[in-house]
Image 1: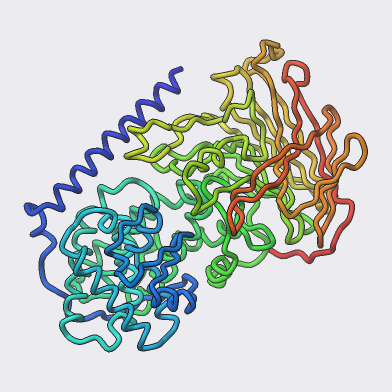
Image 2: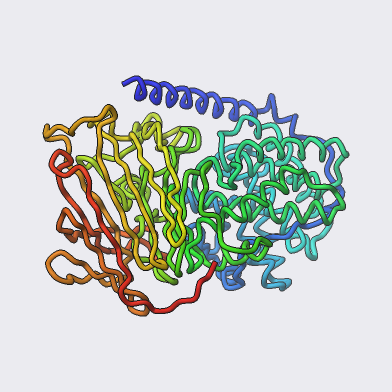
Length: 574
């Protein structure tokens, strides 16, 4: 109970901090503080940093006609400015005020697109530039907007008259000063790091004293050293965070070079670690493993980032600081979560998926986790984050980690992960011709009194994945038959895979144009149940799952195997 009490205390400490943070933000937006954001207006933009995010001229055309497809949600303005609308979809509103959609207008390269971009920036300045409140001025959104305005200043200022040029630079300067005052007090995580990235971009792209650049560089370096782990992962343990941050850090590195300024060693080191980490999380079709907030992968986005990866050879197999393991052989990839939950501060997207794994063969996924529907209804998020949505073990239909669903908490923090495994020891078992590991977690000890241990071994040129799930009491001895020892081992199947009965106790997983794998278990007859795959590009899809159900007091250890019986012959692709 002490662990639960500690997590609860930590949670309410975070609530108090966030309440004070929002109060301070309201104070700093008021007339007493607003004078701090006034000052000298820059004369010009020295350089427009590059943008690595994909651009689509068709979206620029949609925006021209008043249709805004942002964050998976389409809003038609009916001839009004989008900044006049009160759209209840929070993700759409944040995307609108973040202005990353300017890249689509830049991609068209036309005067019409430039004029439309300028008109929309004018609308924002008129309606929100002098009122520091709401979603538009949330520090995370402000950071995205500052970066976007700088990156796409060439299209916004193309053909601009002096009054607009001046108003644009004045508003940009106010936003930068505001962000500088808010950055240190922002919640921990990706948003705070992006704020430091935005301030570094500003110091490089606008006329500024050398002291401003030194301060921005120093603060950026401190945040990078704290948030980017030694193996290149992010403290949130979310693979998507690595991708999103690289999309900002790589252009920042180039901007330092373009301005003949030495980038901080922390920036170079972070990028050099993060690119291999991104490769670590990739399956052979280029998609990222669905752990801790990861949903559908836009493959072209990955390819754009990976073009900057100069490393050669196979991806790393061991990410101990991020808490993941990778097995790779014969065109088969297995990626597993073997880590502790992230700190409560950055756990709002974290999943209860300890010891879950995914398996891909060639370019086809066979065993997956449900992932999240990035732009879908928020009420589905708890389902996607639960242990049952992962290819791992649940005890008594209970998740191995707890989430806060308090309304008082969610209004301020969302739904952080407030409990879970405290110890997840992991050991590699690699030998010649075989990759493997064994790990255990204590996420169920407090409630049910026993540990879950999983061993995975990939061998025979990648044709056999042998698994063992074991259940044991921390102090030794047999598990009691007390009605609280019901075990469910789940293997979620990708919706593109045909799942066929192959005899009484064998199941065949067949890809339409790929390999066929056969699932067997020595101790328990596998069953097939319905499942949901949340991470589809077009939203959730129905699928199925293989289930092993039994009592740990009767069967303390199960051995299962996935055997590749029909090989499509995909080439190795690292």
